[in-house]
Length: 146
Image 1 (cartoon, rainbow, N blue to C red):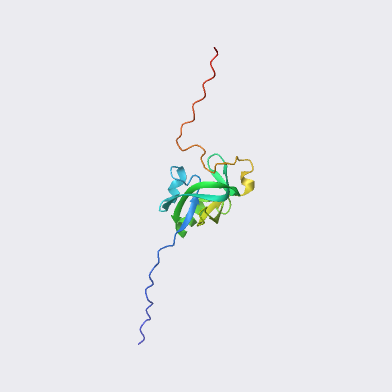
Image 2: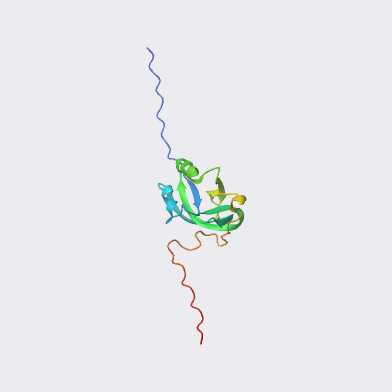
């Protein structure tokens, strides 16, 4: 009588995480940050070779000459696939791996130049231009007529 062959148990390795650079509504304090549930915050970072444009309710980064300040998260393949669906890859954005200013590779969601042709560039590389919850500045007093 032949005994069934037993396959050795394979130990599962933890999902390898990768860095994701976010610059818009996925950042802490914004509505879509909830889509990063389970991701590990890894600090702020700077990415060069990218221009940031203000589309109103959200920004869009494209390849360019500027720098963008954003947040880094450690994410696994499952989280990246879920975020790709949320970000509309490949229709609205494409996910590309680019070097951070310190040389580490990180994924970033990039748009296309035609998508931002009428949107102002955020030269400071930060969105929103005003901190979340910031009060608008008080209007200047008109000069007094003496």
